[in-house]
Image (cartoon, helix red, strand yellow):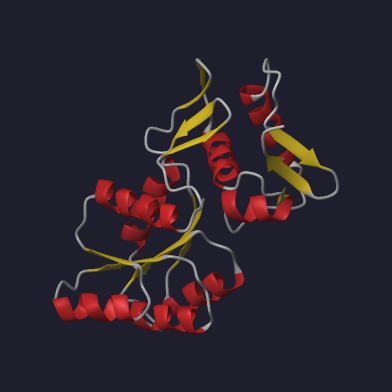
Length: 223
């Protein structure tokens, strides 16, 4: 899943980015409100994390702008402001959740997972298809009784496929959700990773789960 972090404090932004990337998310960072708004309006994200105090336009204004532009992406607002009035303004501007600084990173992750589930057809923390299971908290996968060891990108791909079962996903859509802003769409890296993932979850099983739709992309479904 792909997340945009709009945070002007470089140390805080790097801390959040590194932590989220360690949890298998693709993360882009914008360090001012205008840049964050532009990225959110022109790129596809599954979640946006916005600090309130930003140069240019602040987090409240950014959120109102995105909602006025009908950007539906869930927004988690971060701020050192703790008054009820500030929280009300944040939520009324269009944010979906509000977390005050300083925060425990474990709580940030829990709120991220919660917001991503709200926007997904699959609400459980355990994603399944046939006899394949993926735990989105422990990041452990298994097919039947066989445990599957996944790299960070393989995990991200598998989670995205499972959250979009029976939906044909183009290479462009996959790249926009799994890789960051600087991904080179001219490479065959997506096909390479999907080949690796197929070898891990389909090899040795009669029922294949990842299917190629020629000229379009890939789909995860039971056949």
